[in-house]
Length: 412
Ligand SMILES: Cc1cc2nc3c(=O)[nH]c(=O)nc-3n(C[C@H](O)[C@H](O)[C@H](O)COP(=O)(O)OP(=O)(O)OC[C@H]3O[C@@H](n4cnc5c(N)ncnc54)[C@H](O)[C@@H]3O)c2cc1C
Image 1 (cartoon, helix red, strand yellow):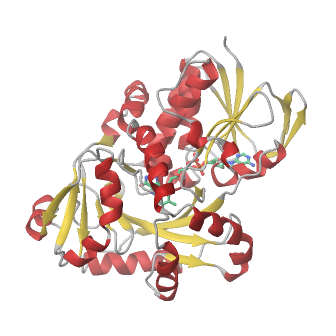
Image 2: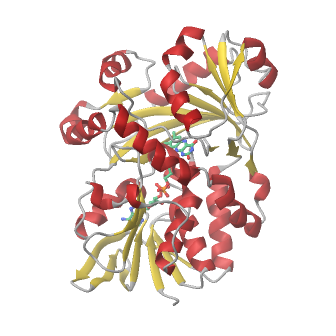
C-alpha cells in the first residue's frame, strides 16, 4: 500500500532511498536545509567499492593511534576539547576491533556493498547519468613489500569474501597508472571496483529525476520531531510544522539528534575528512589510486584530480581546520612532484561514523512508522543505493536480499 513518507536528509543515502521509495509508488517528501548533495555527499573520494567490507578498526588499532597522532602528516587528529565527549565512541571502536567481531562485520558489509553497481544502475540509467559511473578497478600502492605484508589482514578479509585482489609489482603499478612517479615496490589491483566522476552531481542528478517522477524536496531545517505513542506526528521546522505519517532518518552525522527523540540512543561521530581538488593538474589518471600508508585516495574526477582522506574528531560544529587539507596537499606534492595547484580547492566533510563501521538500516526500536538509514562512515557513497533499495523492500513488506539484522539499531 502506498504511504506518505518523509525523509530527513538529501545526501546520497536520503536521495537514493527516496528514489527507490518513489519507484514503489509512495508519496515521498525529502526535507533538508541544504540543496541535495551539498553536505558530506558533496566532496568524497568518489570510490564505488563493492569490496570495502573491512571495518576501520582492526586488531591492534590502539597501538597505532599514538604514531598517527604524533605524525604531523598523519591521517588522524583528535581535538583535545572533543576527546572526552568522543571517548565512549572510541571505547566501542576498540571493542569492535577484535578479530572475531571484525570477521562478523565484514560478513555483514560484503553482501550490502556487493550490490553497489547493481543498485545504482537503474537509478543512474533512469536519470540519464550512467556515464558518471566507472568500473575501472583501482590500484593500491605501497612503498615496500614489507608495508604490504604488514597489511595482510585487510586484504585477506576481502579475498575470503570473494573480492578479487591481484598482487602487482612496481612494473604492474606503472602499467596501470603510468602517471604515478614515486617509488612503489608493491601493490594490488582490484579490478571490480570503480568510482563516480562527480559525487555531488550524482546526488543532484538523482534528486532532479526524483522530482520529475513526482517526489518533493523541501528546503527547511528540522528543529524537532513531535511524537506520540502511535508514532511521529509532526516535524517542527524553521519554516513551520509538517504533518508526518512515515518517517525515515537519513541525516548523516546529525542522525542521532533525531534518534534520541525517537527513543534510540546511537553512538555516532562526525569523522571529519578533507579533500583537495586540483582543477588543472595538467594530467589525469586512468583509475583511482589508494595509498594505504597515507590513507588517501586520489581520484580522477570531471572537476580535476582529487586527493581525499584524513580522520579528524572534533564534532559536527567545530570550524574546519584546513591545516588537515594542507597535509593532503603536501602528500600530493610528494606523490606528483610539481603538480600545478592553480585553482585547487579545499573542503571538509563529516562522515557519519559508527564505532563498528556498520550503518544503521532498519526500523526504529520503539516507535512505529520510523525507519533509519544512516551511519555509513567511509562507505556512504558505495552503500547509498544498496541501502535505499533494501529499505524500500522493508517498507513495502518485501524481504530484502541482504540480511539487515547486523545493521539493526538494537545492537547497541
Ligand atoms: C574525505 C571523505 C572521503 C570519502 N570518500 C568516500 C568514498 O570514496 N566512497 C564512499 O562510499 N564514501 C566516502 N566517504 C563517505 C561518504 O561521503 C558518506 O558516508 C556519505 O556522503 C554519507 O551520506 P549521507 O547521505 O548519509 O549524509 P550527508 O551527505 O551528510 O547528508 C545528510 C543530510 O542531512 C541533512 N541534515 C542534517 N541535519 C538536518 C536538519 N536538522 N534539518 C534538515 N536537514 C538536515 C544535511 O544537510 C545533509 O544534506 C567519504 C567521506 C569523506 C569526508
